[in-house]
Image (tube, rainbow, N blue to C red; front, side, top):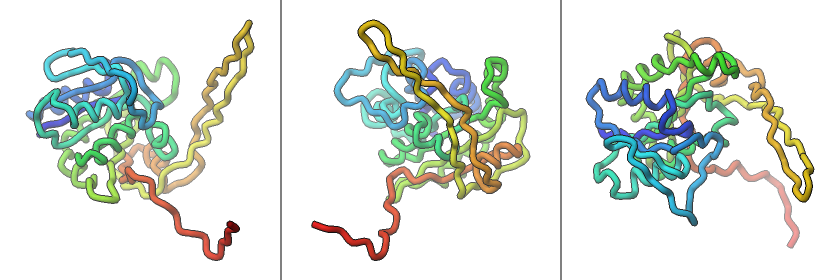
Length: 254
């Protein structure tokens, strides 16, 4: 297959390179466009009014000054590669992208852009044991990379490029192996606890982001619970916004 790889951690991130090595072992043709530096939590940011600088890292591997969704657009809509891409894989991300995370995730934004452009999109993410420098340095991506490579056709089949379009979101813990796979129709709700601190200096007022704990609310059917139990969580996520039912009896004044 012709596979377009991207991420939001940057082209030199460990996860995307471990995944690339694993997929190449199966004989896939890899084409990579990834951000030149970390672009986490940029959601579906698209560069419209500035130029994106591209630098060739190695053959068919390009670093882009823009964002993950930019990378997908470049890989699919330009003549950079001149090949038909069969699937876009985003990741493997350092950190989970479950439930509420999907709104903010550049990893998921790239997979979403893929299906909007008519190509199956898969997002892959690994959750560290704890968000400490020690745990992050020891993150294990190999088991999820191996799962994705062995089950690529099945994951592609779960995506949909027809309206309503769907991308596939895959999460696992940082482990050497998994107990199995579980499909998740319930996505976790995160209680982030983030705050913004205002600092006033001479002539400037600054806001500083203070991250919270990103704890999921208790739900034993959700993706967060599945990952915590040692399984791989697979979710099919709508790429397009869908409206809820109209409230019966609502009256408006003109």
